[in-house]
Image (cartoon, rainbow, N blue to C red; front, side, top):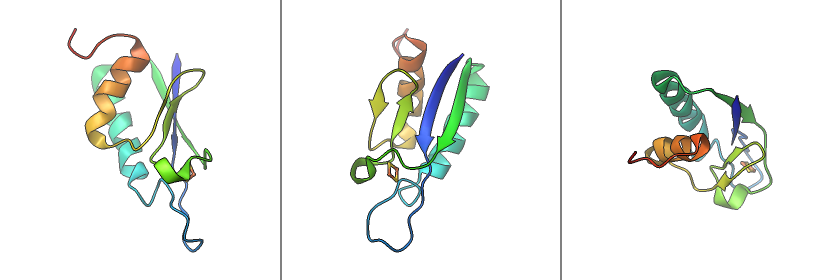
Length: 89
Ligand code: FES
């Protein structure tokens, strides 16, 4: 099974950006829905801060690539990359 981590950290008062404020919780829901719909063998892990807050939302394959400034439009492309094939196959 592949594992994909998404930061869902929410920061309220520091003035520093956080992934949840930029929509990563809805993004996590979209990943889970797409994984289920496509029947992919990927576990989504919702994690606290990855330390890359300025470029969030951040998504990382465990042991693999990192994607920053991720939007819902990127979900399928990232899942394709994690599964190791092109989106237009
Ligand atoms: S809040 Fe997401 S990387 Fe820091």
